[in-house]
Image 1 (tube, rainbow, N blue to C red):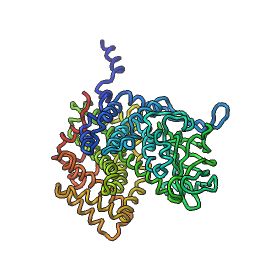
Image 2: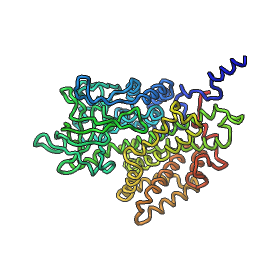
Image 3: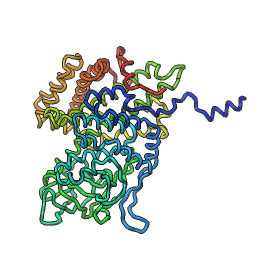
Image 4: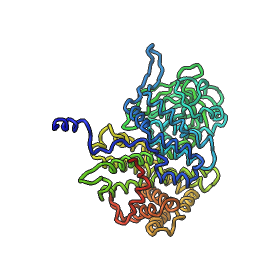
Length: 555
């Protein structure tokens, strides 16, 4: 009998939480459903509920694991020696791509542009970034490309139906043969990075015609080509009048690859299911879109939307990490008690849950401003400054939160078998994509200095919470005092942007969330009754309310 017990002990794990799967990431998240209703996404409820069920499913977990375990591989030539410049993916990637495009992350806001459409689409993005982040890149790029393509109405009209299609067609064939297309972007170069003014890629007109709508041949190198298997992509090149924006197809009408060569795939720290490449243009066929010499301004309209995606993605990553930590703590016993019932661990979990909810509200608030911006000038101005603020803060908070959530699991969280290891490697990416923290903060400073109406729109937004909390009022006054200086020094840009993010979160919580969440946020993030690490909440915080909004866990 003793030998059988010893054998069983090596075969069956005890005191382990088991899988956290087959839940609904939308309907089981009380804070998220409240936010979706508050910001007018009710019309899309069936879509959001279906997406939530998919994201919380065991199927999603298995597909995501396989897609990241077997990363893409570059195939420069076929077996006959022909140059093909193609990337091969695991079947799980293709299945995930079909699912994400079927979820309408890329299309909902454009195909059904009613009030609340951008919010509903943002909720889908937030959910998908809890599932598998790699496929979010091509879907998000396809979504954001519309902002730039609107500068070429005829071209957009030509491609529109296939860009907004909810199917996935992975075939490397000319667009005329495809049922749907993916749109990518290639901007940065080795010598410039985020400084797009240093673009050296050269554009030469194919005929005597020049300017918007004219055809060019591009020659140069791009350090990062997002989604190299895309059917369409936007890129920058220099003409006589300066850096201009161009649109190119991946394959020519005769079925051959457009004149580009994939040099290598980046061996990335995270986001490993997705391919990012270095590429050379050898006479790439492309069409100029937007005003010649104003290419950076044109493509930054697309970047404004992808920066919103960075904020939503970081918030989604955090939400999944916190959900995993809560599940583990609710089922794991140490020192004769469940972890979640131990005061110090509970302090950590409540703190993580509070920050997770705050980042979710921040992302959806700026999505709502983007949504209303088509109808309301004040909302458009708030979106201009709110998106980079949200991008900076969510991306800065995500790595620290994921690390703390990982620590809640002990050594198990640091093993590649666990989802937390992938989230840990994923968390820093959004802080780098579409402008590092310094670039984003300088953009916020530029908006404050050069666009006084945007500054006033932001101030009007946070003033809505004036008088609701003493800590909020004090923080608001400090921020306004800083703005009153003749010129805020550049070295203070991060502190300024951080203050703006926290004030925007608090103002949103005051309007939309329960008083317990607003009070806890103001007391700890604005009033200084808080330490430097997570898990330093003071007594008197309504922990039960905060946890109950995020912790609807399966038994």
